[in-house]
Amino acid sequence: MTLQPNGTLRIAVPNKGSLSQAATEMLRESGYRQRQDAKELTLVDAENGVEFYYLRPRDIALYVGEGTLDIGITGRDLLLDSGAKAEEVLTLGFGRSRFQFAGPVGEFTDLQQLAGRRIATSYVGVVRTFLEDRGIDASVVRLDGAVETSVRLGVADIIADVVETGSTLRQAGLEVFGETILDSEAVLITRGGEAPAGLEVFKRRLEGVLVARTYVMMDYDIATADVDAAVTLTPGIEGPTISPLHRDGWVAVRAMVPRAGAQRLMDELYDLGARGILLTDIHACRL
Image (cartoon, rainbow, N blue to C red):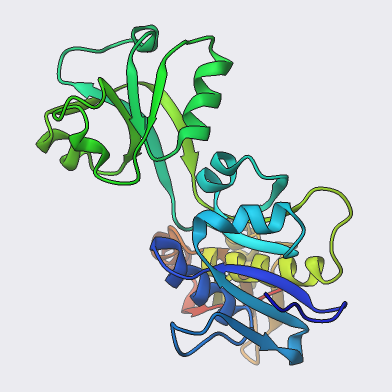
């Protein structure tokens, strides 16, 4: 692997899988160039002082932990499973998953029943750490796929895997039990110690996208007498912008509001007397 000269931030990005497309979209929204051909292994964005390396998601924490690359985007599950000397610095809001134990329906109800059992999983590091932290002695069997069938085939007594709707488990005659092993999502990681040059700018751009996805800009006109009540509903981030209108006794208000519930908020403002209520998407921001 040929690395760029000092001063260029070297970033690992998932090359495939559920994290790949969402990571690429976030980077584009953050103003970074991204590859057009999935066969490209690297991409230099000289204007922004970064170079991207497209790697297997499971390998990213290892490259970052060893210091070969400066930062990376991967799953929290993959980071913890790797045992790499890398740490999470920002959650990215996509790729959410939940890891739980599952066994034959009606057979398991308590984690202490794991003792002495065979547990099949693709995340050996995560499961072993979970068991060790709770003093449970069980055998962990590594499988790279089709974990749900391992019980039926006699390879394991229990599985530990990602649970979404649970339909796949039910088809295999399994059900979840016990506490959640891990709640995972996509995260930005870097090697512990001194932060690499350029990390703060990169992180700030991603944070700007996260805020832009969470908030919308709301504009409305309202009578001066009702401003205080309206501002209570739309306090904004550091306070709304209020400007006088040519119409006597009225002002224009602009504030960032949470995207979730924005339509209900428009109804409440309308009932309060606000008019000309507009919602606008935010593409990026800095707070």
